[in-house]
Length: 197
Image 1 (spheres, one colour):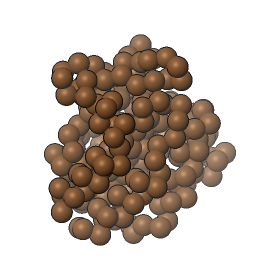
Image 2 (spheres, rainbow, N blue to C red):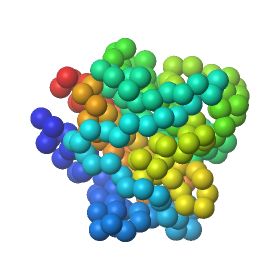
Image 3 (cartoon, rainbow, N blue to C red):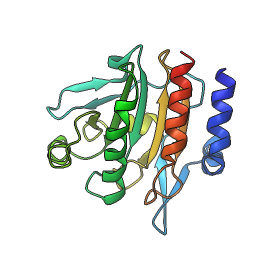
Image 4 (cartoon, rainbow, N blue to C red):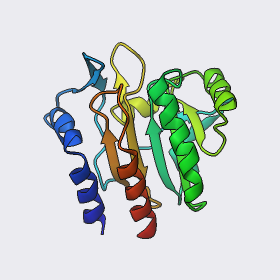
């Protein structure tokens, strides 16, 4: 079954495979920011392997780690900044979708925004069903997941799904961070992963 999920993720995202080819060859991964090519620090984690642990902070600067969600299926929505239109829409979309899943599913949005800005955004936009976390303190998530944009300190746009055993079963690195991810594919994969557990 794990092979099927990996195949599903790879099949849905030919562009992901093209983007990550450089990372496989030990070169830096690059994506577009509008028309400009930017370089990402670190390497994308491998599908079906244990997801790398990371440490971020919540709105109170309290540390939050991946292990805090042990035994849960975790969808991570990584965005550059909640102050941009696409990032705001992406966060609101997952906030509205989480209610369609059981309590065993946790959805996180992680950005490099300061917790103060994230708290303000969540209040104004009524984002109250997902956890919005900041990678602004240690940049730990961005580095371990290969998303930290060199010279910008922002995260590239991506979606990851980690199963209840802690294995990475789905990923999408959006080739141009000004564009939306494939929400339907991510949500379909999440349903499949949850069903298999």
